[in-house]
Length: 424
Ligand code: HOZ
Image: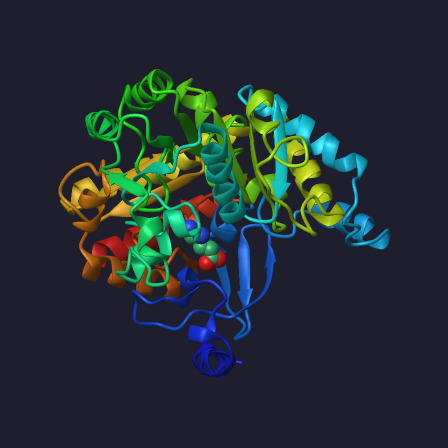
């Protein structure tokens, strides 16, 4: 069925036709393709088109679609039961593997999404410190928990509604927002609210306002400030964990968080989130401690099976070098071409993810990202979709490269994107 027809039908029974707003193509003038299947770097829609996919389930699929080891592990697990609501050995195995990747994590709890991970991590930080305030960076997105829908990136930014109605004012007042990459602003927040801030939360490399890496010294400064004020530093590595490096941004930038939130890759494409940190912190969680958090499907056998084979496969030597090299190839070639054309374009990237900002100078904050020319973005996006390149439909999202995107696929993408840039 054609996408217009599909979308019309969906809108009659699902608000906006989608189960998560970022997929609704609200910022562009086309309807979203309805997907039938994925295979390696490709997505196939119900109208018979095959796309090269640069969304990769918003970063969850580091090996591409229907990665055979994951499919087999999930199939085998499903044959023995899909949910027990009881402990399994595989949960411990997965926990141990995450610990290997992130030295700052001694204990971890698995949940079902990144949103649950960040909500629970913040509750834990509040419960532990007895403080209510949280410092968040504008343009960072931490899922749809009440405390985080304040100047949020990703879907809320795409819709132009970074603060959501329905969040009690008393709660949003507990979220202090400061610009990303501005350590001084965090210092000032601590001066102003001395003894009241439970935690500082951020994406250590922002990926929900496009890709905005931290400026040198920024993460260390936040580490120092939070330590000096007995406040917790929470890294939301839902996107960057197991993507920019096996140990995420903490490995890349050598700064450790008190609590780390994970999602996407850790579940190998199944619904998984997780949060972890030092044992003395995590043991405040029920039933070991008083802070309550729970979930029937948390740590379910399908999710842990997919997560386990994915993380095991990621331990293979040189895998991140490969991802780094491929991302560098695509972005550098595009950048050089844009320079030849004298296009107003910034390409920002980290291993496995990148984004294009149609703006004059480097983007280091949400304010900068918002200056990106939306008309140019729309043209670029729509032409790419017509040429069967599936990109995130918003400048406030990241493009993702998987290990299934080999040199041939990248060269083909490059040829198509160059043609499009040439016509902008
Ligand atoms: N949170 C995702 C974007 N950063 C969107 C997920 C979705 O719409 O599927």
